[in-house]
Amino acid sequence: MLKEIYSRKYLQFGLGLGFGFLFGFLLQKGRVCYYDVILGQLLLEDFTVLKVMLTATVTGMIGVYAMRSAGWVTLHKKAGSIGTSIPGPLIFGIGFATLGYCPGTAVGAVGHGALDALIGGVLGIMIGAGLYAALYPKLKQRVLNVGSFGDKTLIDILPVRNPWVVIVPVAILIVAFLVVLEMVGF
Image (cartoon, rainbow, N blue to C red; front, side, top):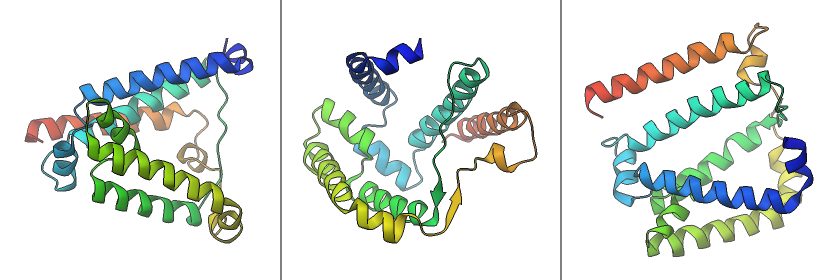
């Protein structure tokens, strides 16, 4: 099934567009497209964003490894490095703290009419992506490969044969943390 999707570009485009709208809808329903909610997270007063992100992490982790265990997908891990792990998050964090939106929530906020997200967010995404594409050859040569640590995941690093030995406890810890956040009132 997935090989058929991979071979049909229009189907990929349609599924991507459909899942994009679904993603935006769910972000909106999760209330993470509102500037006040994001600002509350940055001020450590409203943990809605963290809850949504951690829930997505557990769902994605279980979903990807369940599909892998069923033989539906193959993981294509990408190598990481200090050169990719420090500048990218710094740029993301500066934009997030300055504008009050991440790329996903900015597009979701545009969907409900937030002009600040349209002008600052979407325009910023386009300019940033264009600059990155233009500078990529130099960045790859001088920055992105600095301090390479390969394509290892936590499951690769730990001495386990079965990935579920890591996935289940990590999922339980994240869910327990979410329950504690709710009990404390965050």
